[in-house]
Every structure is written in structure tokens, then in C-alpha cells.
Amino acid sequence: MLLSLFVLPANAQVEGALTMEEMEHMQDQDMEFMKQLHKITKNYPAFSYEYTMNDGEISDVIVTGVDSDMDRKRLEVILFDLQSNRNMLKNKANRVGVFYSVDDPADFKGDLTRTVVNNLKYPEDAKDWGVEGTIFVKFVVDEDGEIPFATTSSNIETSVDIYLEDLQNQAVEAVEATSGEWEPATVEGVQVSSLEVLPITFDFQKNPTLPAVMK
Image (cartoon, rainbow, N blue to C red; front, side, top):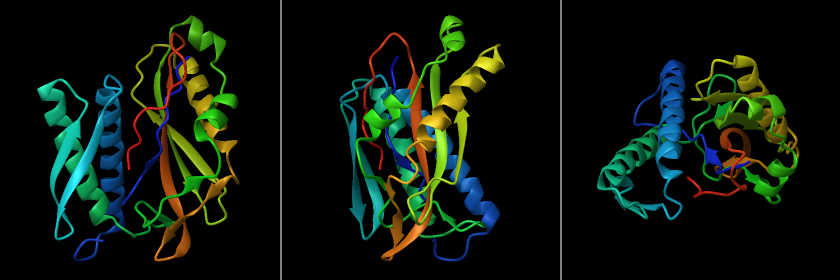
């Protein structure tokens, strides 16, 4: 079983106000960008990236550790669009007071990979049916470091929905077990609720790994 984790702060003020609908649409875009990034980078363990900034704006993205010119260019475009969204959504809360993008993201106090692995079980029926892939757990870390809400998204295709639900439930339970062990995010020095995304990859043929962290 492979459990691959990287915390992706589901980040998100433009010059001028954004409506709540626009903010939520942009956050949905961020989720799709993250899925695309994970799909490509899982094949490149040496993947890394760096932004070049000019007067606070992104001028370039430098991607290394990717052999394919096509994949590297795709990653550059996705990373550019993702960070542009995050800059526009910076320090803005949604309709329920959750921030998509913050000054300092929420931080788990211990070893997140080990903790989640210890709390995770691969459902036997899902394993027997060959149901595998990546579950993206979207969760809120509140001002007290608790997790009051968690849900999932995935691009796993299977004809056996009940086994996909088993994977989703396992992923959510493993993340919820970390509740209370987080340092909350901050905006201008104030602790706030923030949205985080944790991809969990189920692959029973490999050992758990920790891929590159997206920030």
C-alpha cells in the first residue's frame, strides 16, 4: 500500500472585491490544478519548482527533476495558474469564515505521514477488487487546531462505488484522527480557520512515501 501525502494549503484579494461565488469557483479551480499536479508529479520523485517574482508578481516558474519537456511545460503552466489564483484569494475568507489562502498555513505538530499511515487501513474488499488511486481530503483546521469538517474528492473510476466510498471513509477518518494536533493558520498574526488539502494514494503494491510538498 502506498500512502502518498503532501499538504496543499487550499490557498486563496485582488485589487477590487471578489464575490463569494467567484471565490468558491477559484477554489474549485485550485482543486483541479492540484489533481493535475499530482497526476504528473507522481512519476517524477525528483520534481521540484521555484517561482521567480517581480514586484510581487509571478514572472516565471522554474521546474526541475522532470525529464519530459511536455510534462515540464504543463507543470509550469499549472503552477503559474495555481499561484496566480492563490495571490488573488490571499487573506480572504469565504461565507463561513474559512480562509483559502493565508500568511502562514496550518501546521501539523508531529510527523503527519507516520500519523496518517498509522490511522489508515486499506479496505480488504477494495483491495481485492483492485480499487486504487488518490483520494483528496479537503478539511478545515479551525482556530483551535481542531478539524470540524472534512470531505473528499477523487478522480478514481470504478464500477464498484461502495468500495470507492470505503477508501474515501478511510481517508477522512485518518485525517480526522489528527484533530487537535495542528497549529492553526494565521492572517496578519491572527489565528484563523483555513482549508487544507491532503492527497492520500492507495496502492497496495508499494510502500508509503512522501512526495514533494506543494506550497
